[in-house]
Image (cartoon, rainbow, N blue to C red; front, side, top):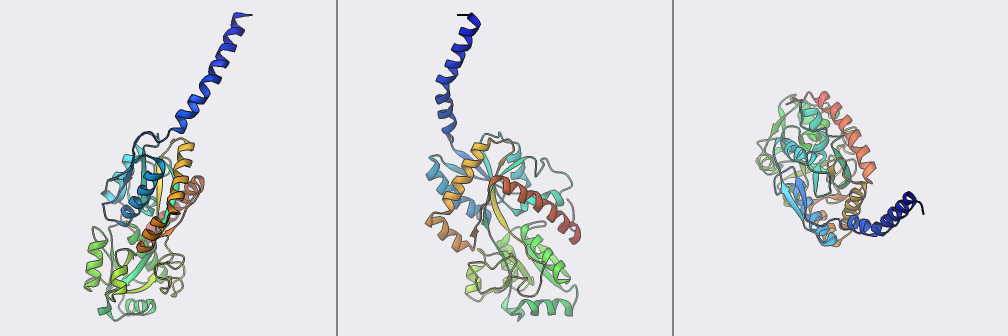
Length: 325
């Protein structure tokens, strides 16, 4: 036999023998703990949802998913850490819709919000609810609008920080309703809720979890939810569109992303594991308490959704005249 042909034959045989081992190595993911960066402080809605999902995925995948809270700078510190991480599936991110706001509110970022991340899947749609203190004697959204229009510029609203999802929700509502109101930014929802309950700030588009107890105890009045459809946790509360302000819908979502160039089979595996976790009774029960609705998309669909969100939020930020940092 020709030596070159013998070499080719041996090489082909070697590849055939090694193929099962390569497949086994690939199937071994994950072989060590996975770091899950959450760009907000512990106790935030994003953090609570991340922990609920991570617990179930840890059980299913046989490796611990470790939450790493990297709060600060409207989430951009955590985003940068993920963008710069090795694309091997061992560093991922669970972030909110604020991910698509930062390109419009920061003049310069150490990452490209679209190009440096691979979408895995949304996890939940978590509506914000417009709440107000009972001391204001306002029981409907139309009464709030009437009060705002009676004294233009006299009303204010709370937000969990400049450029946060709660801020963008309120700005979109304000533009659609054609009212004037001033943003009062706080460090987080807890402080914002306290000030609204005390009546020192007029209203707040709050995540449902921090205020559901106060709504049920009549310490806060829920006027509307900012989402495109009613919240399962507050089925009797209308959307802002239903209450007379079309074009005010804002979808506050929480989702999973990985560094760009993460192998597609790993991205798909993570997607499937999130879907599996969302189907468990424990996660369903936790989401019900939080007022969150499970929501998933295929990775490529999520990438497209993020692309569109970046564009629409850029328009909103400009229309609202928000400060660029």
